[in-house]
Length: 401
Image (cartoon, rainbow, N blue to C red):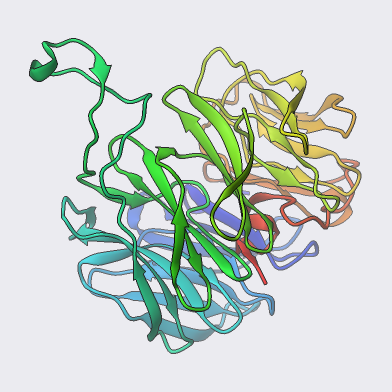
């Protein structure tokens, strides 16, 4: 099924669908399309909106939310299963900032904001903030978060002052700040993890806040951005990858590191608390393997993973992970045995959505502007764990109530 343009996110009300996809409107990069489809890939309806597309967020009642980021205001639009607009919320904000990410709570919204100038991330002394908004869009609380001066042992510089020799970079103040690319805003019950990154180096900081009051609690030390997950009430897994670093840390509800693993992966957490996933590393040829992050901090490695571009995986209730990599839909079972479920020859598209595991073993994912739904894969239903797929579930809304 061809969609109107490059896909930016997938979500589903449940295993029976419908599936919601956000995409560009063809070559128009300033317009977004929300498409609803059934499990056979038939289009149920389409709605067009202004602004850059973002991932859809679904609330527990099946309402799908999308953000419209205009030049003077930010509007969250809610649609029901028929595509009817049931609510529009204008978020209280400043003209000089842009919504980078949002999550839907019970009756309100949590958002992260970055300074902008026009449509561009601003070179400015303004700092980002995290907010919680009531159902009318008014701001319940707002917490500024400052990255301050950054440093990392893997960052280097070469300029006239160094005699054009490579040396460790001195601490610097970011000129541009953005919300992180992967899981920038997570809500785990009474705690929020919001991640912002330096626009040039990719060095990021995760800030831990109280969900009810917005009180700042702690921050991670600066490090390269990576994949993240909710691991329990108030607890998060934060990955770091790049600049010579590859590790994952578990933070408790005080923002303190409880445990670390020397690997970085697209994490899945099953109903027993087991953590696993395909490793993710910016290295070619690939050194990545499927990994199990053991409770004692060790890493158990499984099969090697050829190729590079990888979809975020999903986990069925038999412990089998499924993901797209190197032109193949691959499955790795609980015994770390691998098999290919589907393949496309000479497939080189790098824009890949996360994997969704739907009714009767159907697997859905997008390659650039094409939605693929595969029936009869032999996989079981989605695991009931806390993080069995991207964003912690089919709703695409990374919130643990």
